[in-house]
Length: 267
Ligand code: BGC
Image 1 (cartoon, helix red, strand yellow):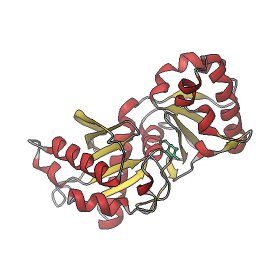
Image 2 (tube, protein in one colour):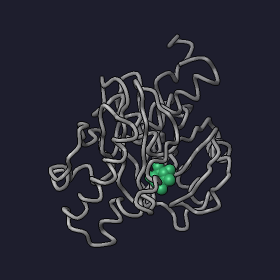
Image 3 (cartoon, rainbow, N blue to C red):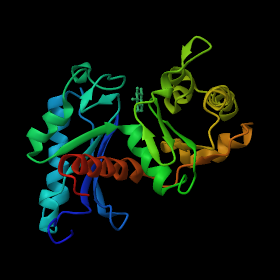
Image 4 (cartoon, rainbow, N blue to C red):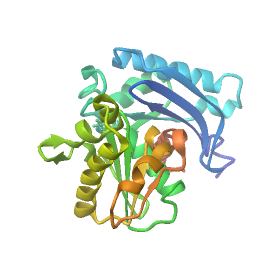
């Protein structure tokens, strides 16, 4: 199969965030992100045209002068909102022009190669659950990313239930991400103990609803779990993500691979 399919295993993953866009070459067969990552700031305003320019630029930079196989490699892109069949259905932290836009088609035409888009937390969560902190865990795994908003991935036996949007659960009359995202802590100048009380309320609710086997915390704040995990009292094991800033890129590449298989029947 490899000889008939020279691009097998080679993908490009691009992770769009509120402040930065980063990408990497991913070899899924070897399970690694190859070489160095390319980063650029997210354009402001983050309109579809401006964002697709940056995604194209990163793709060119990643592939320039590398193995020709990368010039045909399918691209997976994360998007920080609901994505159904390539169409964005929300834009909590992006320009509203993204709402109801066919992002798969926009990026595919701009990059002139197959592009498949996935929710950012779904991508990072899938990668974490299958290859990171959740590797080998059966049953329900929740991956919660604490950043500008709260992203979530609901995984069962390694399979993603897409677009869970658990950051928008209404708790005590508030959208959870307004009170418990990493940015909410900074915006309100909360101490770690005060912030931990909000996380306790949020994670207790998730634990009650899903009875998960494992909760994984992602986002930049996952590197500071010693500040808040000791204050949490949950029945469920709760651990930091291990793939760090590569999780989104890796998950985006997994999405590109899934889309390719659906289209061609070839993995
Ligand atoms: C969005 C999610 C996204 C999360 C993290 C939330 O506001 O609704 O779709 O995954 O932010 O970017």
